[in-house]
Amino acid sequence: MNPRNREIPVISRPLLVALACVALANLLPVRHARADVAFVVDSTVDRIDDNTADGICHTSAGTCSLRAAIMQANHLDVPAVRIEVPAGTYTITIPRGGADFDAEDTGDLDLAPLNGNQNVSVRGAGAALTIIDGNHTERVFFVDVGARATLANMTIRNGTTLSGAGISNFAALTLADSIVEDNLGFDGGGIYSSGTLNVVRSTIRSNIATKGGGLYLTGASALRGSTVHSNGADDGGGIYSSSQPLYLVNSTLSTNTANTNGGGIYSAGSTYFYNASVINNDADHDRDQNGGIGGGVYVAAGTFGISNTLIVQNTILDAPIDDDCNGFLVAFGWNLFGETDGCAFGGIGAAAVGLVSAATIGPLQDNGGPAWTHALLAGSEAIDTVFAADGCYDQNLAPLTIDQRGAQRPAGARCDVGAYEYNAIFETLFEDGFER
Image (cartoon, rainbow, N blue to C red; front, side, top):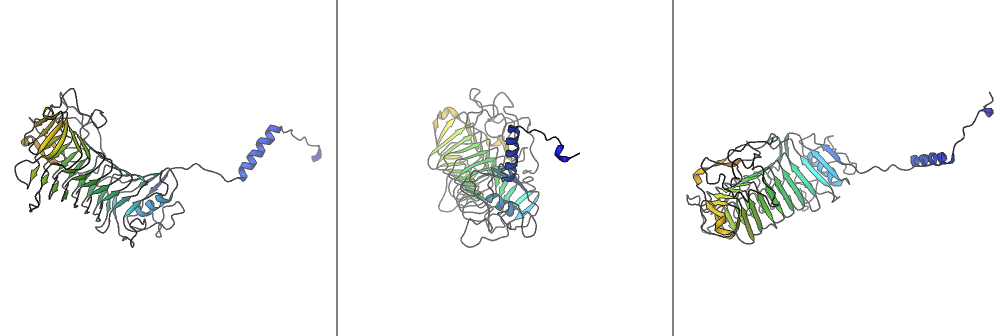
């Protein structure tokens, strides 16, 4: 057959237009929507990324180090970056370079995204499994202005610097299911935060500073389901705060020491405790000529509010006589003290304050849950004594249906005072790797 005689199909004008559009689209560059990015760290060796412009976590050794993953995250223009850090000990070995404290390729691990609207999360395999170690030559983590960061499921330890030896936060940070320990600083041994800080189900322990052994807080902060213990400082052994505000909910301050004022907390801002336990902290710990007061709570200025909070066994000079608080406290609900000398009360005043026997409070130990607590013992005045009409609630007036450990609350006729609910049933499962 003559090819000229073959029937030619008729193509409609709309179809021609559609085909032309498809052809044109194939010639144009393809635009992809910005997507979230995930990096999986595969080396414990501290190495820099060899090309922060390529979007690939890659060092000169062909690995993805923790530092390299963070460097790449800082340079990506994406909504969110997730960095997975397997079990292992990741030690900072690259010293700070010159006077640039914010250099991402030396010194501490800097979360400083160029895209300020980016969420960066660094997640370990568990607090007992993933260890980020500052090697006592540098701070561990620095969260720069504009960042939105999460640090979770890890231990952050052995940092040394002026402000925030474990973590220094100038942005928005959530610390979850983690331990911050054995850090040494000036303002904030464990954590310094002038940004927004949210600490959940975590332990801040065994840190040392001049002010705020565990935490030094000037920005809006909240601790929930967490324990701050065994920290030391000149002022504010556990916490030094001028926050606007600080909320401590279902949390414990214990066995912290101050050489002068505020063994548990030194407060000069707006501080609010909801079902917190402040137990066995000590002021004037060094017994020198400067003295000190407020073994549990020292209110230097601002507002200090308490609701259904337990403050007992706090001392001066490790003496057997309680020194639970010093300053003006605004009291609501039902709060129990070992003694109230040195304290004045507003709110509903004496109607919100009672006494508890120290013998009915157990030691700081593993009572289940992610962080250590003080159990209430049988017969304690803290059991089932919160006013029924008020119940237990947080700063948003939301009911506290679990205690610090994650156990059911209330377990009896009424909610218990403090962070621990007596005879409660566990209904929440926690990840492995917490303080045991």
